[in-house]
Amino acid sequence: MSEFIFMLTHHDRTVDNALEVLEQVKDTGLRHIGFKDVGASPERQRELTEAAHEAGMTVYLEVVSVAAEDELRSVEAAINAGVDWIVGGKYVDQALERLEGTGIKFAPFPGTVVGHPSVLEGTVEEIASHARELTAREGVAGVDLLAYRHKTEDPLEIVRAVVDAADGPVIVAGSIASPEQIVAVTEAGAWGFTIGGAVFEGALPGERDVVSQVRTALAAARGEVPSRA
Image (cartoon, rainbow, N blue to C red; front, side, top):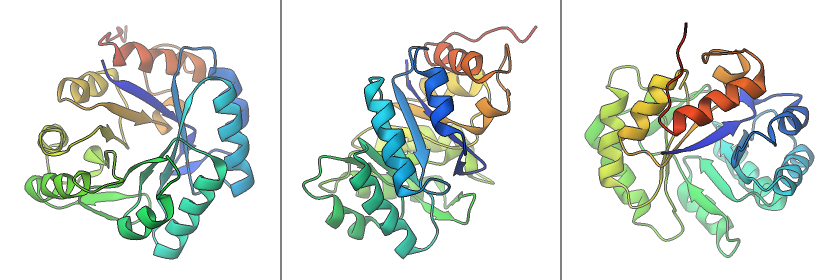
C-alpha cells in the first residue's frame, strides 16, 4: 500500500475553489492533501492548511516556481501557513536554511527539473545519484520525484532506482492518471504518490465527480484496480 496525496491543483496551480473541494473530500478517508505555491496566496495557504488540519489531514505544499526568489518566497509562506511537508523545489541550500528548527519535512526534486509545468531531465543513474545525495543531507526527509514527467526514460525504472538510492520516502508526483499507474508505482516501492489534474478531469474509472475519483485513487493505493466496464 502507498499513500495517496490529493493535490488541490490542476495544470500545476492550485484550483480557485480549493477550500470547497477540501470540504467535499474530507470524509472519504483521505489522510494527505496538498496544494501548490502557484495559484494560492499566503492567506489562502493558511486557510487551506488550517481547514485540512481540522479535518485530521497531513498537509503538503509543492513548490513549482521557476525562479529562486519565487521559490524561497513560497518556502517562507509555507512556513507561515504551518504545513507539515514542503515538497519539490530546487534551491535546497537556501530552503534548508529557512526550514531549520521549523519541524517541517522537506522533500525536494531529484534530477534536473525545468520549466512550468515542470519536466524532469537526466539519466536514471543521474537522478538516482542526486536522490542519494539529497537524502544524505540533514533536513531532507525524502524526495518529490517527477517520474512521469520524463520525456525519454521509463518512469518505473526511475522510481525503482530512486527508491533503492534514497534514504527516505519517495513521493511520485505529476501525470499519474490511472489505477494501473498507481499500483505500478506502489509495487516499484514508492512511499506515496500525488494526483491532482486526473481527479479534476474525471480520468479515473467510475463516476467523474471529485469525491468518487478520490475514493477510486484510495482504493488503487490499497492495490484494488476497479473495472473500467
